[in-house]
Structure formats: structure tokens, C-alpha cells
Image (cartoon, rainbow, N blue to C red; front, side, top):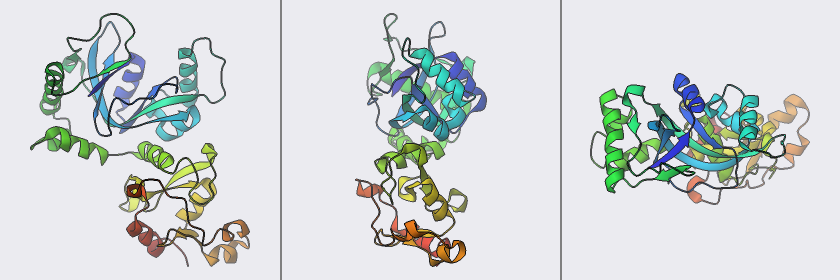
Length: 306
């Protein structure tokens, strides 16, 4: 587990809306976050005078993004009402720095956040520093203090009936079960971040790496039983994303780009797209993140217009 410090405004805004994922952002991207593995628990602790653990979520990934893309990915899940408020908050924390048009920030992506009623807030751990700068602290659930904290969290989940945590921890090896469960609960923002980083921030077809025009495309849409997992995604330039969703382009069983003859027949253009036909797409470094052959076959059969 990790306890991260936050302020009341961020927490209160999100607690009132209870989104399915949140961005625990940091105003600077200079320092990475490596305290947790994917699926581990990230807890929210308020600054003094409240000094209590008030909720949390499950860690997905840390990444660096400009404010514009953090807003596109998570919207009000950033804990503010609009993009301009987010930018102003970041510049406020960056005391004395020259204002930037689109500053880069650190993003701790969390899924399945939960928010405790005030009567159920958990006191800060007994070893929490009372003075000095403290951004956060990691706890091992097998240590004395960490075990007590983990027990407190489990107690709140069970007594408050916070679903679906009860099912995830109901039988054996709760921590391992919970991590596996959490990683299956990605939202749209987490999907975008994971796909963007898996493809090394390059369009899978063109190699374009201008972030504002890159989009995480679902191979099989969520509305049609698709999921927010990297193997169901491709990072595509915005125009190619549109053509992929409308069935004018696809990817074959050898990961080669295919353009439908219908594109030229219906729009009398598409020269730049046809020039890429037969080219192998860029793939993530990890084989486990390559597009699913089954999902690509589904796209060719149900979406692509030959």
C-alpha cells in the first residue's frame, strides 16, 4: 500500500462525484512514482488539520502527460471542474516558474476509487511523521503498522458494503485476488494512457508521435462487449481512428495495414492511405500487449467493409 497526501478541494470534488477512475496528479513531472506495482492499493490522506485516511484507489500506471491530454483522458477525474482550473492549479503549485502553454505533469492513474464517509475515516498510521515535508509513504501489509492499516481498510469495505470489493476479498488470498480484480477494472482514461505508452507514443500505422493527434482506438468497442485492455487497443492518428471505427481500414492476421477499396469508390481519394497498404504496423515491445489476433479477426469480419 501507499499513502499519498492530498488536499480537501481535490478529495471533496471527487467524493461528491465518485468517478470510476481518478488522476492523482503531481504539478511536476520531474520525479517518477515507483512505490507501487499495478493493482496495488493507493490511499488518500488529507493534510493537517484533518490528518486522516479518507479513501483510495488501485494503482494502474504512472505517466507524464501535458495538461491538455490529462484533461482529455480523465476530465473531472482530475479533481477539478475544467481544464483551465487544472492548469491554474498546477501553475499555482509551481511557485515562481514561468507559465507554460501546456505544462507537463506527473499522473498517478487510479481505478475503482472509493471515498469513506467522515465517520469512517481511518486515523493516520502511528509512525507517520508529524513534521517536515512528506509527500507519501509505502507500507507493507505484513509489517505491524501496515497489517493494522490493511485490516482497517478491509473492515471499512466489509462493514460499509462497498461493492464490488466484498466479492473480490471474500475467499482466500485477498490481496492477490484484489490486485487481479483491480487490473480488470480499467476505465477509458486508464486505457488511453496504457495504450499510448505501450505504443511508445507513436501511431501504429504512420509513426506519428505528435501526442495531441494520437488516440487510443478500441478494436472491439466496449459497447459491443469489448474491454479496456491494451490487447483491445491500437494507438492511431485521429483520422485513422475514424477510418478504423467506420471500417475503411483494418489490420490483417500478419499485423499489416489494409485499406478497403470502398474508401476510394465512395470518396474518390485516399491516396496517402493506400500507399501504406501492406505495411506492417508498429507493435508494443511486450508481446503480451500486442493486438489480440481474435479481436482483429472480429474487426475484419464485423466492421471492415471489403
